[in-house]
Image (tube, rainbow over all chains, first blue to last red; front, side, top):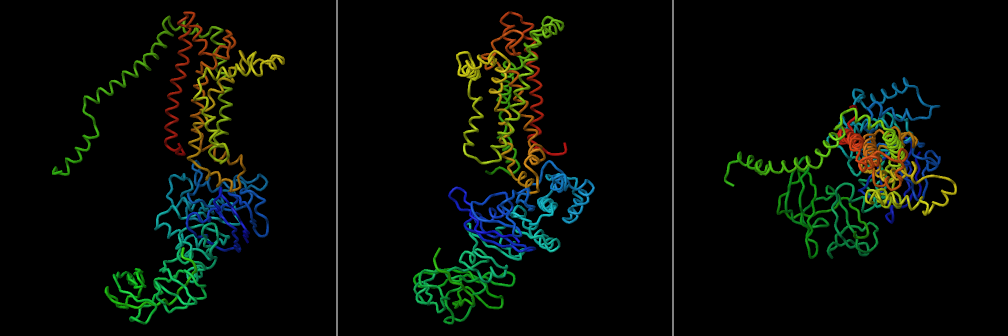
Length: 348
Length: 288
């Protein structure tokens, strides 16, 4: 188990990590998800020993990891830009971790060859063993980087934006491949990404970070359906966000009561979050909002409608998703009611 | 605007090339300039060296004074290249791979010998180690000879040539970043293993390039060495100093014979430099 406690890391006055706690159980595949500058890569580097925290603890299976440098932690690290050794062949890259072991535990040449061959087979790139990194495609480099990291039989595998530098199609393929590889070898893994789709699709558990803090930890379903904070709601999935006023348990938009529960949020300026597909369309007068359909686009199983809400003095235009069988035309006056929604206090 | 598409592209080509007459004039100016300032002097050096025949040329080179100057020059170059190689690699490694306070100051300090006149560089050592200098009395009392001896010449040469290796490596190492080193360390490599197996192979062409320039300057340095050498014949004269002495004594064949050796060194350096630059430009493609 990886345990990170009260980690603080500052670069000058900028707090990259602000009291971060995290536990990862053995065999998990965890995603650190957040926008750039959220501290996710710094956290990964601290776990690997490539950066040092200003305060806090890191332990692997109860053993203090901060007592050891990166070279003694047995952590496999896969870099965003691969960091393959450019002057070595693919074979030598993968063999590196085995060759630099202390003489007492170092495998003999034959055993190293067998092990490298195994790893290249695992990443299905055995046929590239004599090539140099500059002769490989991005996806191939990434898989070699992974094989190289696995060569030392790491207790943890850390991946920094593993697919960040690849094009969209290769990313999708590698995502599925990474997930099945994890099932096969079952090494505790943490990967950093700013791509929510990647995190939700690949990980068992997602850690959402923002501004050096963890906003929420949960299964992909959890963070999508039950966002803990306004940040998570707006960062993951697309949301309709409306500035509302909570007054004694009632919710008002532009001074007009919305007839929905305030969900226990205290009085004051707040924000209402609704997923696009959670807006039910009804006949005028039946829902929380009234609005005029301005534009309808149809693609795939849904139609997306722009609706101008008449709310108090101004109008707000929102986009909602409706099933194809619900007939909508521009100019229709409709009523909208949020089937599921969240209200978070504060307006920024 | 109403011209057809085809002639548009030829018009664009015409824009790129100057009229023929201008091209000829520009090339002629460049060639004349090179001939007058580079080719002619080189030709003069070699014709003068061989003006009394090959026999006189080799006789001049086998004079004890000439042999001693060649030996001293080679020795001083070996010392200063060796030390500056170690210093340059260490400094470049520190500057490119780590962040620390005073880094910019260190970089400008490394550049100092480039911006100081070599004569001043020599004088600094006179002020430091001379009889009236800062450390002079102590050195005299302990019978240590630095000025007007090999150590002084080596020191002055080291000072003048110390930016070359570091300067060749800093941009290269900065561009390569620290990721490969970090990868090596996370794979369990020690600091030394990382340096010798990852860093050094990645910078080897840059190291050779720096050594080459450093060596050329070390062998050719005149000003700084002239101040500290004392011009003791057969003892503290390097090749450039001997050229001046022989020339002032109207021994033209001997002067130009030594000068031709230095010119040969320059030509070899030039060729080697071109080859190395090609390797560096190729981004150090492996396997060749």
